[in-house]
Image (tube, rainbow, N blue to C red; front, side, top):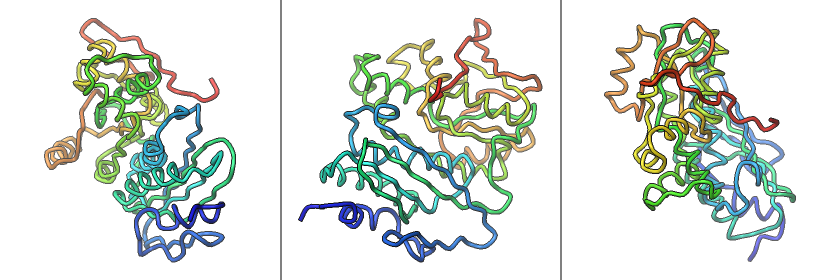
Length: 323
């Protein structure tokens, strides 16, 4: 029996999507959800929309979209040091496409279960394809990470290998050509299936002084963190964690440009006071994740990137929907 309307779609594909959490008293199927936040916790709430032709190409797979729609919100929650908990999904569809819905729901459900996220409600409607997810996380009172809080002298760290996703998008758009098929697939997957660093964000509570997720480009997002913290930053270009796939695809110089300006990475960019560097080193040794120190905060405003040949010039603007 095929889904014939909005309520059939919800019942078939989304009523049981994600984790089964004991703190969900009433989930999908009523006018609103009822959840039970634990005592001594604050709620962290974020929302993001993916719109066809703006955030993804018209031929994007439902598997990628199901993953990305939740991953970008998980990354925001990770940047706050929160534990993901409950999600809402608003889905606008041009028509009922059962294979597409099954693929989308399977990918979204896999990622949500991996991070113990329960889908507790949302909305479906007809129109141009767009996906909006609202995600709520939980964090002990006063322990959330913020963009503000960095001080001159703090070390700057980043997770993963920024720049890969931007190269992957360029491959998807036909703006970049890579001869090695394995490198090309790695870069494409970094764009199509970003990895939210939720475990790292939680581990940074009490260690990081400031944190932001890298969605609009490392350089531009570091500018935002510095502006919120009232300081600047100096980076070492040779310390940027550039992947072998990106190096092989575009060479070292362009790889660093991608790392500084490319968006869609959904990595964490954070600062650690010098007094906590020992604890940070210990956390990395215990398997915190792929984390690299790339520079320091300084008193004067602005971000400068030093290479062996001098100060690098790069675009600081980051992505802006209205520019």
